[in-house]
Structure formats: structure tokens, C-alpha cells
Image 1: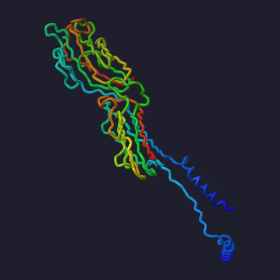
Image 2: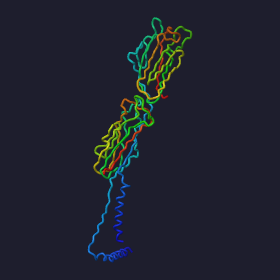
Image 3: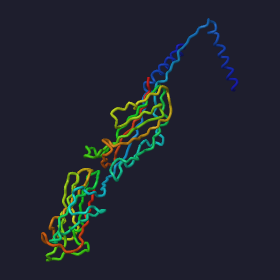
Image 4: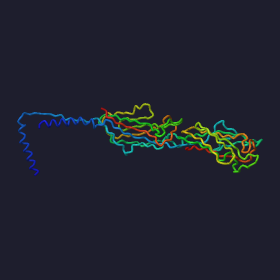
Length: 184
Length: 198
């Protein structure tokens, strides 16, 4: 049955062909067009936990900021940009969420730090929450890229000076934001 | 039927141009919270003497203020003594200060109680004045009854700095009459300072 079907199909083609074969050569061309837009995808945070949890911020004997604060880096995996791109990092200070009044003399209610994102560009993007300007917060990558981005925080400092103590609060919170932007 | 081929091709090309407007994402963002906490902390460091504030007191020996001469050798009445000590302190939340005298005065350390009707003083009243966070409180240890006595200072905010304690034993202080001679013995009391939640 299979061989018979093929034979019929070939015959039908042979019968139809003479109608076109009688004219001189004619060519038609059609443009097949598509594009790949400049786009970026953010990927996922390895391990699923995207929170930098620093635990207790103050030295309980002095009330001042601990000098040994640290948190493991976060890795964003699966990010890509299909064209030239920029990576931008921004961050907000860790601020007391319940104690929102002006702190009394000798005290502070926020902690500054430096957030950085490396792996995407030669020079990591970094943002100091205590700085007036952050010129290194945006870095440019000239080519399309996919790869891990490692985000870290360090350089913790009491807002207003290291001699200040931190007011008690069960919730100090800040936010690190990493943005990939496709450049035209 | 012939036009169908080219028409179909143009439709496909049109779709290819239209798709990016809705599907492409030129910006991708990830946010990561940064969290921590600061527990309620009160801390009181060891005492240090305020220079130039000692009268008839030897100094701080560990946690002890030692009076050089408790009585005037001529009259046997209590002799004035005073000292000011400071404690580096911090409380990072609204709190209170409790100043507590264990005996409500200087009493014989051997545990004797006052003898009613005697002309001799068997206990010596004193004042402990505490200054902290723009607040001042006085513990009047009047030596009338040997008992725990305390005074409280409420502080409405966090505070840091030096807690100042001024001890004052007045000239002629007595639990019976001013300038009464003092019974022989070793006298003492314990003052405790607490920084604690209100």
C-alpha cells in the first residue's frame, strides 16, 4: 500500500508540470524577514531565597553596629541580554520599620552598606547607600551575554557616624535592586 | 489560487514585526530585601570616679566606695563625705532607672538593728542622686528602718552617655538626732542601679 501511494503522487506531478514548462523562465522572489529584538531576562536567584538576612545588627554590650556583619552572596542564574546591555544596581539603607521618628541624640535608625553586582561586566556595578552620588551603579556590556550575576553586600556603617547607637527595632529593612537593560 | 502563496508570506512577515511589541522585554529586574534587627539593649559599664569630686572618701575599690573617716574624732558625730562616680551607659529603647538601697542607710554590717531610745546613732542616712538622660532622681536613704528602698526614673526614649551617681553623707547625719555620736562598728550599704524596661 505504501509503494502504490507514492507512485500516484509522482504521476500527478508529472501531469501538472507541462502547463508551466511551456513558458520561458520566470523568477519571483519573496522576502522572508524576521528580527530578534533587543531583550533581557532576569533569571532566577539560586536557592530561591533572595533575602540578605543579617540577623542582629547591634553589639549587645555597646549598642553600636556590629563590626562583623556579613551575609552570603546571592547568585542570579539564567540572566541574558540579546544585545549590548547595561546592568544597574540600586539599594536603600536598612532602616527601622517600626521606629520611624527622629532618633534621640546619640542614636540612629538606619544602616548604610555597599551593594555590588559582579559577573556581568568587567567592573562590578556598585551602589553605596550612604553616598551622595553613585557613578559606578551602572555598567555597560558591549555584547550580548548570558551568565551568572553575583550580588553581595558589605561595608556596613551606621547612618550618621560610627559612634551612634542603633535604636531597638525588630525590623530593619532595605532593598537591593538589580536591573538589566537592553541597549538599542 | 496563485495569489495565496505571496499573501500568506506577507502575513507571516507582518506577524514577525508585530510580535516584539508585546513579547520583548528590554528591562529585567530582580529585588533582594536586606533585613536585620536590633534587640532591646541596656548596658552599664564599671564605675569611674569623677576627678575632684571626692570628699572624705578614699576612692573606688572595685565596686566599693570607702569612707576615710566615718565620724569626727572629737564629737563622734558623722563626718561629711561625698563622691561622684559615673557609669558609661546605654539603653536603646524607652526604659527606667531603678536606684536601690539595700538597707535604707548606712547600717552596721554585723546586722545589728537600731536600739530605740538611745542617744547614739546606730544608722546613718545618706542621699544618692542619679542623673541620667536629662533626668535627675534622688534616693533618700533615711535610715529610719532597715529595709530595701528604691527610687525610679522613667526615661521616654533611648539614651546613651554617662549615668552620674552622687553619694552624699551629711555632716552629723544620724537616725536619732542630728550630730548624735555614732555607735562603734563597721557601717555599710549596697546601692544597686538597674536600667530596665519600663
